[in-house]
Amino acid sequence: MSKPASIARKYARKSAPAAPVATVRHMADFQPSAEQAAILEFLQTPGSGNLFINAGAGCGKTTTCAWLLGYFEGSKFMGVFNREMRPEIERKVSNDVMVRTISGLGWIAVSKRGKNNNFNNMRVWDGLKAGRGEAHVSERYAFYDNVVQLVGKAKGQLVHTVEGGLGDVADRFGIDFNGEREEGLALVERILASQIADTKYDCFDYDDMVWLCVVQNLAVPRFANVVIDESQDLSPVQIAFVAMIIAAGGRIIAVGDRRQAIYAWRGADEFAVDRIIEAFSMSERPLMTTFRCAKAIVREAQKIVPEFTAGPNNPEGVVRTIDTGDMLDQVREGDFVLSRTNAPLVSGCMRALARGIRAIVRGRDIGGQLAKMVTKTKAVTLVQLEERLTQWLAREVERLSKKIPVSEQAIETAQDKVATIRAIADSEGVKNVADVVARLRKLFDLDKRDNAETEAADKLADATRVVFSSTHRAKGQERETVFLLRDTYMRSRRGPGGVVIPPSLEEANLLYVAITRAKSELVYAHGSFADHRNALREMTSEAA
Image (cartoon, one colour):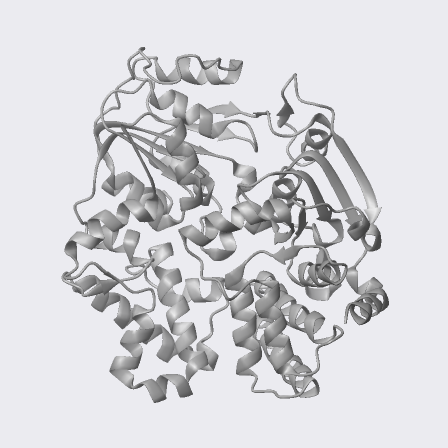
């Protein structure tokens, strides 16, 4: 049995789940599709057990879950992927359903154990500074940054008791402790052990909200009926936590889409769906008829996911191809421009702003990382910045290329960071490194802090501007028209001996997610923004 599945079974209640009653008190006027009716029929069958619903993009999974929950008796919980989704779902479900992120539910249990309910997302950093001295930590920043990263990744992967587990996680995510691996692994092990042993901690961070519940076996809220949305993105520790919140005799319904599993790089279990099905002995039913995407867009998606189908009343829609250099003549406020990587987004957004088009690059955390990266080079001139970026990238590629297996994702991420900074440094009007940082702050709107209020304001503002976004950032969202920088997707790579390695399953999933953000019109843009650098210079010169 796989490790996450076995952990889930450890915490799961053993009683057979009961079938729901056949009386709905919510959404009584809802007219289910044939797939939705089949799911309800299954759930109403005595002894039917737990269920995984394989739900495609725009197939009404949220509405389906809200409708199904109306049939259940007893306490009800619906786990959502992020807090942005919570208000929408709360409007659809009855008042007796608790709607939270998994982390938000964990917070209820963790906060009760803390002395002051003190949330501190820098607590590992602060602990290192307090124990070793701020000057020492600052001097060895790269090493301790790796330590902090691995602490978080290890919690998500739940490897604190696994022989060699920390080393495996470090290799997977390209963490080498700046060449001091053994010291780094030992320090991470001590940090995790101390946090597990501390049952009256003064503070906790985001990772702790779920991890501490599992490793300390905290008393958590339990529910007779548990529905977990976006289950394909669960990490091993989240799978274990979900097992803890199911009451004896309770039932779990996991909703997800295998082909939207695109977060393995940040710690999600790429086989989460299969592990959940195994851990909870689930049956499976499809929900693959989309009501979001026009028929032409569905046909594009079917090249990747053949079972994905369009509703009979969906409009025909449009799929077309243009040159990237012509894109800014056609984009309109409210449109998405999607890319697999960030450098083309930054280039495109700068071109849009030079045209007087309201535009933004989505992802303040990414912009913040890039701004910090530029500052850490301690370069003053653009020539110095280029030299130091080139040196840093050469070291990173060399380091990552020595790993077994080679961390291709990490190499590409490093290359994309440098390419993004270079795109800004090479643009008209940027005279020094300070200008690079200032432009990053403008493009990514870094003067705002990410919180619920800001997120709501951003959502409203997005209707009046062109949003340049990575596909990862756009997941869960939709637009009438989506421009897709096609050349950034489904790239082959070269392995040892020059052997061509085809795109991975996750690469195909990423393209499927990008395509299905479009409701009415999907526009493939071919060609690099770099091909139009002269045009960019001309436009920015005119704007100045």
